[in-house]
Image (cartoon, rainbow, N blue to C red; front, side, top):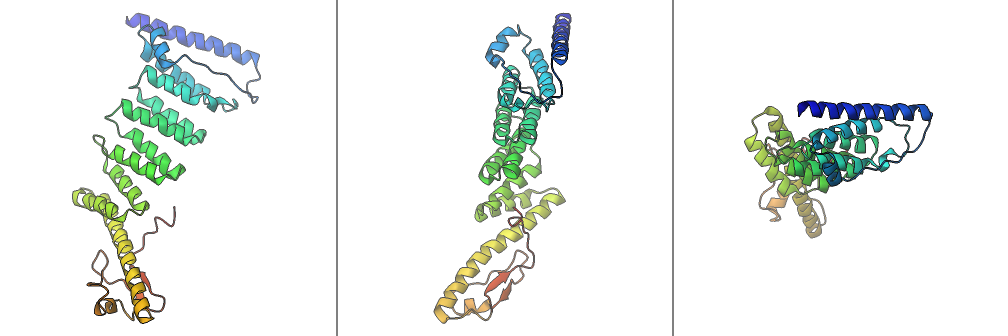
Length: 280
């Protein structure tokens, strides 16, 4: 059986080499041109592979890498989703095509939603792996600027077995970036409680400090606005909001320190300021 497998593989390699040689001698290789690619669907190829579907998937994967290295083929991305769907239908547990295919789709072709679809397929077929949804979340966040989709993907990745702490932090950060402050605070508080490394503890502290400030700032702005409506001026100091009965307590920052308040403009500032949203 092993000898037959090797013989079949060598025959496929030799056939591919012969076809490539013929192709190279017939065309001006580096000229820009178009190509036409058609493949049977994965179900049909499983039958045609006569039990060697993993070998056929390997062969097609190697060919796909070569094909997508040929940058002079101007319409090569017209076929990419079908090609990698066929490969991953033949061998759903073959992890490399999901990752490499998504890199080509996204980083070379700019087709990020297509890349995410392929990675989600990889996650469905390999439920023990977190890398597929993590990469998909990265594309959603960095390239599509789709925070809701990125949150969903990072959450799914974080819930996979053996997912590293980084992914839960990415999920919590996406929640924060969408201004869901109470939910984000709960997630970061849990990260802070369960952290067993300094990076996670520091990241949790920075987020909890900023989220606490943003929630307090909203509360204080409403209270200052109410004070202004009643008395026609801003409070001279934040303590006046408590004295006048507008707030029961004056909130302090996550370290228990007073916020900085400018009575002239009515603005509140924290001693620390993490500008994640302004840079997005």
